[in-house]
Image (tube, rainbow, N blue to C red; front, side, top):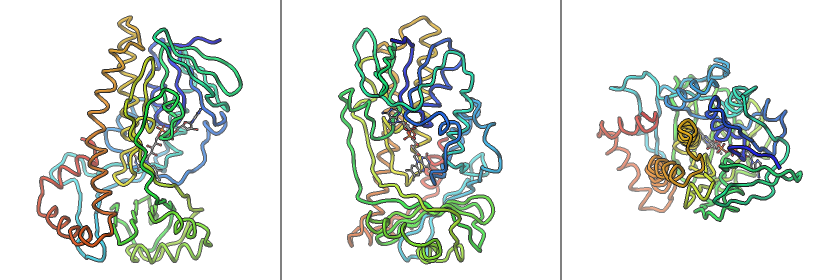
Length: 390
Ligand SMILES: Cc1cc2nc3c(=O)[nH]c(=O)nc-3n(C[C@H](O)[C@H](O)[C@H](O)COP(=O)(O)OP(=O)(O)OC[C@H]3O[C@@H](n4cnc5c(N)ncnc54)[C@H](O)[C@@H]3O)c2cc1C
C-alpha cells in the first residue's frame, strides 16, 4: 500500500494541469494513466485543434506549459463568422471595442498534452503510474483508495477523477451524469486550400450538416464536419482524393479547392453533465465533470479552469494546514465550478438545439435570429467576450 496526499486518475489535459498546479505545494501526488509513459511524453495527433481563450493561454503560461509549445504550432484566431443554410448573411464576431486584436489561439491537442506532461517532469512529490488503469476505488471519510489494474493499491486524502466524459471513477463514486448521445459524429480533417482564410473561423449550420473551418497557419485549415454517424463513417472510408472533393463541395468552396493533409479522425458526439462535481474525499474535473458540445469550443478551456480552481483550493488548504479533502473545501470547489460551467453549458445547448434542428419552424427562425443578432452590437460583443472568456 502506497500513501499519497492526492491521487489523480487520468493524465489528459485536465489531470496534467491539476498535477502541475500542485507543484511546489509539498504535497505528494500519484497520477494514474492507462496510456504508456511513451504515449504521455509524445502523444500522437488526435485531429483536435483546441481554440484556446486568452485566459487559458495565461493559465498554460503560469503552469510553465505555454513556453514548451513551439510557436510554429500556434495559429491565431482573429475573428469568427456564423452562417446559416444557403443564406448569404454572415454574423461576424470580432474584437471591435475590446482590448485584444484576436479572439484566441488554435493549438493541436497533442501539442498541449505534450507540453503539459513535459512541464511536470521532475516535479517534486509526483509519482506517475502509467500503462495501468484504475480497477477499483473506495472512499470513506478517513480517506480514498485506488486499486490499479496491476493489483497495486494507492491510498490518498483526496481522489480526483480526470478520466474523460465517460468517467469510470465518477460511476464508481455513484455520481449520476446526464449523458446525451446525439447520434451524430464529427469528422476532423486537416486540409490545405487555395484561398486565404484571413484568420477567420467559420461555423456554418447547413441543412443536415454543420461544418466548421478553423484557420491554421498558412493556407491550412482544420475542417470539422458533423453529420449522422453512418454518413460520417462512409465519408471517413473514402480515399483522400474523394474526401478532399467532398469537403471542398460541402464547404461551398469558400476556401477554394481543399486537399487532405493526413487521415481523417472521427468522434461520436455526446455531451455529459455530472449531477455532482464532488463526493466524500473525491472531486471531478475536466470532462469528467462537464463534457461540453465542441460547437462553442469550450470543453478544454472549462476543464483547465476546473483543474486550476481545485489546485488553488487544495494548495491554500495545505498551506494553512487544513485537511485537503475536507467537505467544506470540496463544496467550495463544486459550487464555484458549477457557477462557471452552467451558463456555458446552457448557452451551448441552446445553440446546438437552435441550429441543428432541421424541422421547418426552426429552419425559418434561424436566419431571422441571425440577422437580429447582427443588429445587436452589445450581444455580439458579449458573445466575443464569451468566446474569449474575458
Ligand atoms: C472533436 C473535438 C474537438 C474539440 N475542440 C475543442 C476546442 O476547440 N476547444 C476546447 O476548449 N475544447 C475542445 N474539445 C474538448 C476537449 O478536447 C476536451 O474537453 C478535453 O480533452 C478534456 O480533457 P480531460 O483531461 O478532461 O479528458 P481527456 O482528454 O478525455 O483525458 C482523459 C484521460 O484519462 C485516461 N483514462 C480514462 N480512463 C482511465 C482509467 N480507468 N484509468 C486510467 N486512466 C484513464 C485517458 O487515457 C485519458 O488520457 C474538443 C473535443 C473534441 C472531441
